[in-house]
Length: 202
Image (cartoon, rainbow, N blue to C red; front, top):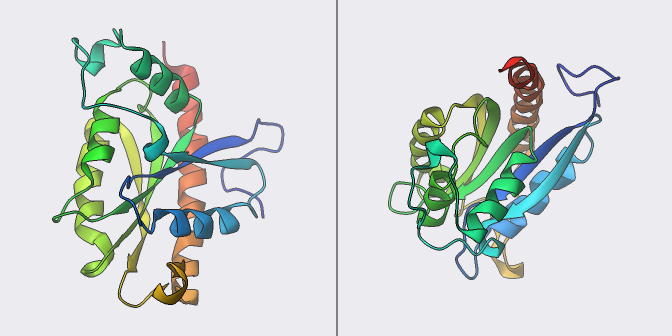
């Protein structure tokens, strides 16, 4: 399948599938696998897992605001280099108390320019409304970071779309697969378009 907005001569888009939960026993791993299996069919795009549980980011401890880009902590410099690699992001986030996990907010707050003028999609999950409230909160944060979040989204119910007997395999029906395909279409199209914006920036 060709990626919308991509020319065959261009380098493949690089998209991070960001696992936002760091909680033991989380469902993020199963959802990440579900996303990557479908995303792997896309030509002209490479999808890579970025697990916040493996980033070892303490609570924000940089002396200067992220917008200055004046990082001094080794973990910040490593995180900056990691995030800067990508043309877009697909955030897999649970809903914690009607919002996003603290680990995700912390990871976003560490950086600024590395996020800017890129696209993002959201796959949320939760008991109530499939984590939709977390997705809405995340959209506000992304907007402040100049990340263009696409309209299409996937919201998975922990009550009906997982097989709890085998540790949490995603059992979402075809309609959720169709929603994910729409999300990927928009994410890759916008990521390609915003690549040209970044190239044109002074």
